[in-house]
Length: 454
Image (cartoon, rainbow, N blue to C red; front, top):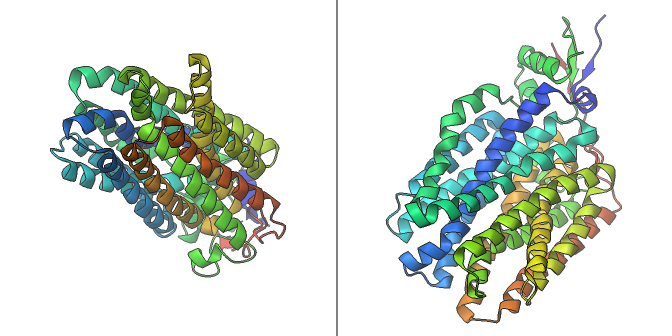
């Protein structure tokens, strides 16, 4: 007599092994180049403004083209992956963000540059919710936040790589050279397609039982497939339209608060990544020194993401995020005042840890809050709504630069969203009505298990 296998529990209780390392490696590598392609605009911005005679407002608008694309990409590829599989969605997104970032290096004017940035943004925005959902799906529950944070810290590694290569390549080879480096993922794409696993929930829905059993044997080496075995998985199919499910069963308030936090956090992240070098140049620092500030910002994000993930696995992740956002507001607000170099670098590192780091933790929070059947949709819409903040951030910075307001006013304007995000995560954490989601550790479950016979 064969026994039913609860796939979610098997994955949750599995010991971290070579299979998890492989998923972590490929997802992190994708995010590294995703972050590289995104931060690259802030690196070349001072040079482009000079070469194309862009006003601050024009430069801010040009930076927003990729962010409009990211918003559309997140809204499209998040739900789409629930239909075509996460592996296919990730592959399409890599082709888009890598290929069109390379084409950016051939742009002859702001119009061509903006079109390429928009299409690249579709891939950049679409890949994020999918790799987070995939990593969350295969990660053992006890270290899920930590693994997602480590994976997503690749975004900061990509930002550091972008700033570091900019310091080396810009003076000698011109701004185009940093865009050509973005073609590396296209060369690695066959390996990504070969070694990255498909979503186990998607395979079960498709009836690909043999393939599912082979993957489970790698997730948990002690698992043995048997004839007539039944695989069960909570909530592999939503009860209605995935978007509407985000607001059912007590999830409405927390969904809105999560969207608010994404919006405010991404506003801070993209305002800083786009304008920190220019603001520091305005304050009297050289371009090379200003790019080093961008390097420190992204370096701090790695510690914030990994440290926050570790704290989130041991304490309450939404409350950890609330504290991080409070620190973000304080550190960014203080950047506009004269400080010794050691204090200035420390504030920038803290700002990176609590803005970019918090963005990473927000994805982990959303992945834990939403059940499997609506996880990509939930993350996609949270990310898509957040992209409105990402669009506003560079434009706000450009408008403030155009108005020639004092330096402290720029940073205080960037700090205010941190206070709003702190309040949103406090409400999220304190919301008393739990959602019914048995497969979500942050709030109960949606739907019954669907048995699939092997």
